[in-house]
Image 1 (cartoon, rainbow, N blue to C red):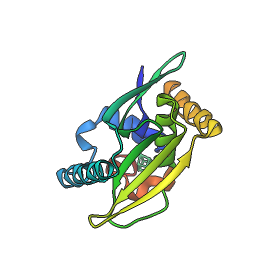
Image 2: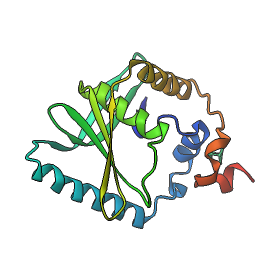
Image 3: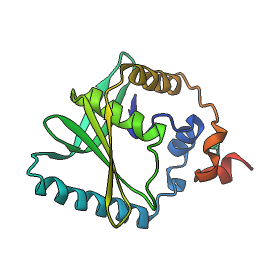
Image 4: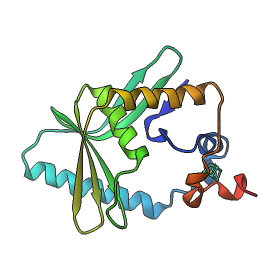
Amino acid sequence: MRFIASWVFKCPYWVYLKNKYPEYDGISRESVKRGREAEIKFREVLEERNVKFAYQKWLTLKTRYFTIVGKADFLTSDAVYEVKSVRRFREPSRNWVGQVNLYMAMSGRRKGVIVQYDGQGFEEHSLRFSRSLLDESISYFQDLYSGKFTRDYTQCSHCSYSFICLK
Ligand code: SF4
């Protein structure tokens, strides 16, 4: 069984609904376009810094029962960069931090950077690899593997499946 790294710490019931009704995922064309633009702009930043990188690098982490996969936006010799398009800069969410921490585990890098782009500029947030957060992440996916799709009501306000789940 395969899980996607970017799901980490998201409402487990959201993961269940996303797999059952992918057509209602709610990612707009506009969001995809803004995300792509953020990546292109940050690519230019890395090139200006003369940093060598791999772009959209597939990574995997195998456990006994399942595999976690993900695509790191940029992978350099010592860091993983994940670019997020935002309307305004904010503290990185647990979901973002868990995702980048997984990429660090998968790639052997000990540094991760969450890069936010608001359409005007960047804000970079550096992270160090956390073993305990990796254990929590694997435990999260272990629960999914076991079919424990609990509801996390703290995430409902921005959930594209609320019209199914909360009716
Ligand atoms: S509406 Fe809330 S509980 Fe239901 S799937 Fe979405 S985040 Fe989870």
